[in-house]
Image (cartoon, rainbow, N blue to C red; front, side, top):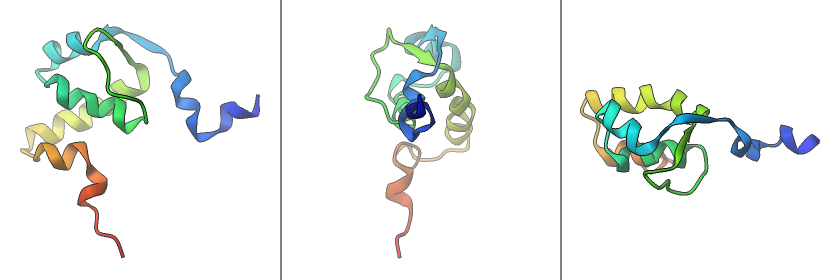
Length: 86
């Protein structure tokens, strides 16, 4: 069971009872922006009816705060693109 300690083990996290569509409506955050939650955890873009994973819910406050502060969507969606490399 060593594979559970590997970096990719986050795909086995618990699912919440809320779908991406419900979360979008409840939080006022667009579905496109909520797709960032799945991208951050290394998954493919979610469908609106897919349930949000528990670990993705942990990231939502950060995304919502960035939106509230007026961050450009590009900066939120692709933080690595905004990082300088040496």
